[in-house]
Length: 534
Picture 1 (cartoon, helix red, strand yellow):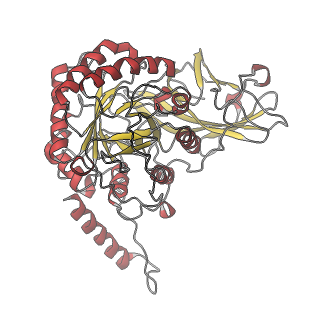
Picture 2 (cartoon, rainbow, N blue to C red):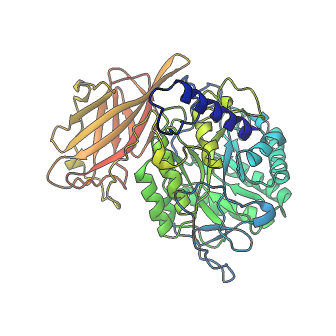
């Protein structure tokens, strides 16, 4: 239904353009596709905002099939033919997801939002439409664990498990693969609810044993101070629970820093089990070339990666959209034949939702129902107009990639990294950015407000930060102090270590972006605060 309406809508736009746009005579002009804009209002308060997203595989057994060659064209967005009825039970060979006969498989689909908040999208008509009209071949069922309505807090566990059971059945009926997602977020460390996780996966993997279309994602986005060692310890306790009931199911494991630090998993992978993959998450307006480079490096080290969640907006889930970066991500994922799942199947009032907040349907969608993110995902999955990265346009965020920091950064050298006292005195440019130099003249710092909104009357600000080494020698680590005009509360941050003291936000480098050669830069650093402003 959506496909028919989409192209009818597009034809009308083309005819109107021919009638009313000047300068059309004498040459054919390609019309832009319809571009419904996502609402600019803040995220709805009933559900949390998704924070930023972010390997060497275990040795294959002797009967593991030979690793297939990747033949995906980076410019080709045609849908994968993978389906349970044809490619069967999935396996992992080297870094490649494969079908039961060893053929390379790429899954591309859509994730629900939290099942407790948006349960009505789990219905057979919706899943049929995503399969038939959107060309999706995988659905992810995101069950939050710790938030309001979460499985391990005040949620109704039986209702949530029944939603998963329904989703698994609908996916089977529509010949879709399905991911059962233990969606940790505010709980940060998957070990927080280890026993609940153990019981959950034991019950459902026993119930679903023998079905060939199910993948298990055992920890969505570990974050905060949770490191790979804690995640690995958790995974090594949950994997055997699932394996006791389903010896071969593909199991997806989250990585540190909102599933961005795949390099840490590559350096110390889980061994002793087959059919494991590691999650990487990105939000295109925030995570750019730095994270793509880390992904490719982890693949080169032998880590099998599955992008179980991504968005084309910024990491808040409710900010600027960057079409150019989204297209670059898809080209890179296709180049390596990696699977990827879009966030999110809802009408939540945020830019990552696929449907406008005014759309109350749970199936039978038309082009007018789609948000800007929804329109892009639909066009990308179906090969619709203007999905070629060469013709893409950027909306909202700056599409330029930051300069990569040197890999393998050395230990932090506090003596060579002064703070930026007096930063608030720097004049702001018309685009909301400030550029200033640290006291010692080592670093040039550019700070930009990329988004702001209010929730329950509280102002939120999202900043991006880039640093350039303007000295004549290499910097081995950096530390920035940002003074604000009043007390602030830190909400989220990425690609840095953050702490707050009164009106000052302290940011120090991570181990992978502390080293900055002379004349070079690091970027893709950002944070969200509320209550304070520079």
